[in-house]
Length: 319
Image (cartoon, rainbow, N blue to C red; front, side, top):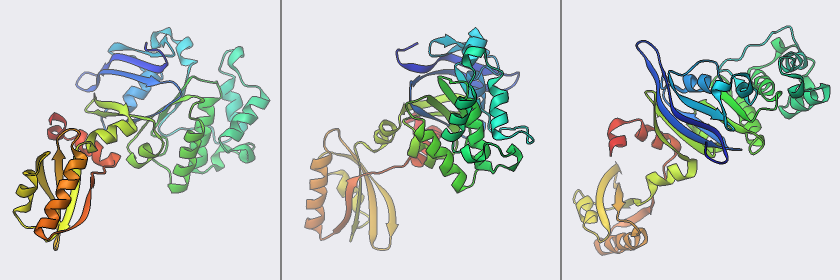
C-alpha cells in the first residue's frame, strides 16, 4: 500500500454470473482527501463502495484501508464509516438515540460517550434536533444523520454512496458544506453522478465506465489535461476558408470549426507543445491583416461535465 494512501485497491473485481460489475480496479486514495467517484448509471460505483465497506466479497483482487486488508474482517470495518445511497433509520428513535444505538455496536474502546455523541451531532448540524424523532427529519437532515452514524465510530475513511442525489438544492448544499468541513480530518470517498458538486468539493476524481476505470487524477490536473495546448478563437468576418488558414499558422497542429452565431465564428486550435502564446500572437496578427474582429483568443475552458462526457465516449477515450 503506497505511503499516505487511505484506500488502496489492486485488481479489485466483482463478477456475477452474467454481469461484470467491476473489473480490475486499481486505485490509491490519498489520506485526508475528498475523492469523487464518477460514472454513468450501472458503471459499478455502488458495487465498489460495497466492496470497500466489506459488505460483499470480491471475485478477485484486494482492497485495504490504512494498510488493513478487507480480509481482516472486523478490524477492517472499524476503520470504515459507511453511508448507503438511501439510508434508513428507526423513525421512532431520536437522532441522539440513533447514534447511541450505533456506537453500542462498536468495541468498548471505539464507542462514543454522551459528550462524543453530542459533539458529532453538533458537527453535522443536528445539535438542535438531537432529541427529535428521526421520522420528522427532512431529507437533508437524514443524510446528515447518516454521515453522523458513519462518523461516530471515528473511522479513518468515510464511504458515501450518492450522498446528495435525492436532495433538494438546500439539502445538497448542507451536505456538501459538511463534506468540505471534514476535509483533512478524515478521508471521504463518495460516488455521485452530479458533476457540478464534484468539481466544487473534490480534490481527486476517478471515472468508471462499464465496470472499468477510465481515468483517475487530481481534479485540477484532469481538467487541465483537456485544455492544455487547445485554444478557443472566435472572430467576426471569418469565412469558410478561415479554419484552413488558421491551421497553417506557425505552431498550429490543426484548427476545427466549433460553432457559428450569425457573423461570429468560433474555432478550436490544437497547438504544438509550448507554443500557446506564440499562436495567440499569430492569431491576432492574422485577424488584423484580414480585417477580422477577435472576440475570443484564449485557452479552452472545459468543466468536469465536458471532460466526463469525452471520457465515457469510446472514440474520445481512444484518441
